[in-house]
Image 1 (tube, one colour):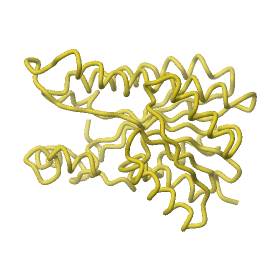
Image 2 (cartoon, rainbow, N blue to C red):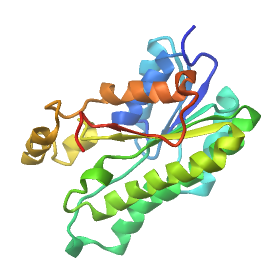
Image 3 (cartoon, helix red, strand yellow):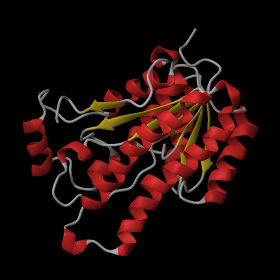
Length: 249
């Protein structure tokens, strides 16, 4: 039997990148997967099509994680499609680097609304859906909280909040049989990293020079860790932060 047979997973921000990779890997291990997206409908539907073509179960559900009504609808539609939830992957996130001189209210709230408020609202919805049997929450954070690169004040602050929330909720939700862990990836080659101009840049080169394994990550380096944290293999783990960075600290 596959590790996640008869499980239901919600993956936020799963239309591309790490989220898409995680969604496909969870489905490959038997989970029915909700591919959440905010605006990239075509990308989300492609992920669903790939999962179904491989023999899995998936649906795409639109929803802005930072809006309560959207979150409520996300879980209502998830229940209608697959029933109660067992696994939540809080992957939805936005980022933009900028110096202290470039920081403004709009960008601050844009990143905190999605990366922090959104994570809290979706986790709140999942807790209601998990029921008495408990569940697994997997937060996608970042190694920026360890390496604190210049120009990342807002983004690093949001991920520092995610790390702290992971610790708090692991203690708060443990009595409900809900495990809460985080994956903190290093630099990973995704569509977003390409769009931001990181791939092939001096920044990538500088990162690779600091990584003991000598390369940036790929989506397939992260997805199996999420499968582990979603499965009973990690049943005694909660409040953990797994740094997936090729050894970079």
